[in-house]
Length: 165
Image (tube, rainbow, N blue to C red; front, top):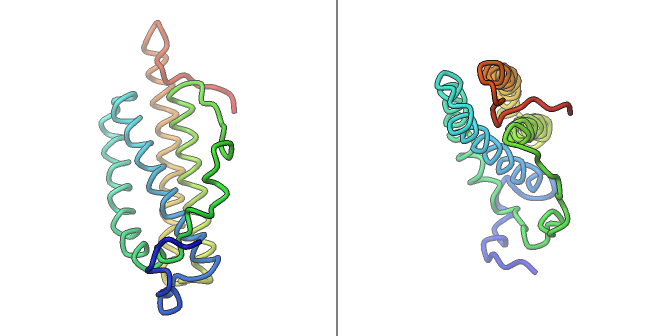
């Protein structure tokens, strides 16, 4: 049952059908992942230069995503999404570094999905997400390096401990 009366407008908006739902979900996933990364870098790592780079990427992506959301939000059917169920994602995180790395992966994977699906649904937008994905790879490396430096600099080992994946 669609509770959103605007869904009847889907046929007149580029954002309709399964590809549009995939785009909508991944726009959310990308921005959510970037927000978590920013918060952990800011409040746990306290790495100001890295924070500046993460924030620059997040705000830049935010502008691009804002425009796409307006097109694809009408495809959203969150009430029917199997991912909404309680047991869908039961991943346990050991520490804040697990949270950080999981959200880098979340954002990278979402950027890849957007890059691929937009090749079909909005080819003019696809390349920008490839750039975002590769920037995320660079920032992830910098975050892991920051964790390692922080751990080496402290006797007690920072909350951001490296764990094998």
